[in-house]
Image (tube, rainbow, N blue to C red; front, side):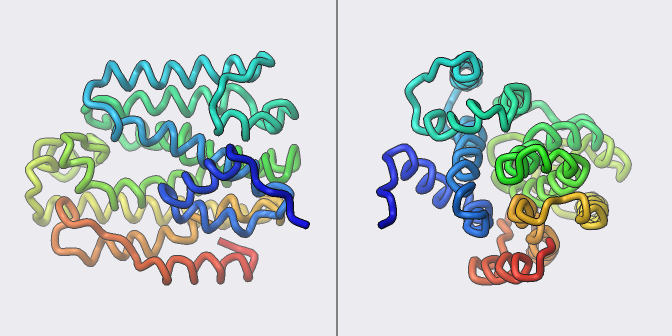
Length: 284
């Protein structure tokens, strides 16, 4: 008889299913005995990533992030603050499968989200994604494969950048509406425009070239990650499955009339099918 899920397990499962559908679907391909741990990591990521949407003042966001920082430090010290996500992360923490630095760096990187400062450069963007999207892939890889997953660090970095850029391009309308711009300043300058052009919502040839350059960069990083598939333990492939959706996400952005204003999202059934096909083929 299947064991009844705990309230903390249900919390993480439902949170990821509602807030991060693509990673949720990918987690369904994780071996049964490791899926719960993966859902906990994805739930942690959701909790941190959604703070900007839950606050009206950056100070409140800083307080929330500091609470999470203190909480994970306490968890690694053997204490356990009351929260369902921390409860579900406890086995990974106790086994030292994941490290305090990885979770702490993810929290620290998300401080950027609280403010409306522009992203200075493509290098800065890759650094931000390295501590968020890429770090999450690597932590999930370790949660599934243990120390064997350490060999996938470089592939995690590349795949996370590809997935992150695709997600940011798809989210420009949301970010622009709240006065944020994640499009790198040096890329904008290379095409003769700046942050104000993005925030204005004006779509033109120069803006199109910016999106094309960033899309090409994401595709390049994806191909580089795919070239390292031999470094990824077979059981840990589900950690990389979300990157399967990078090309279709970028294609969707390229088809809308104004990607600065119009949301672009491939259909749910198509995304599910692409994830299933990639899992069956053993590649992303």
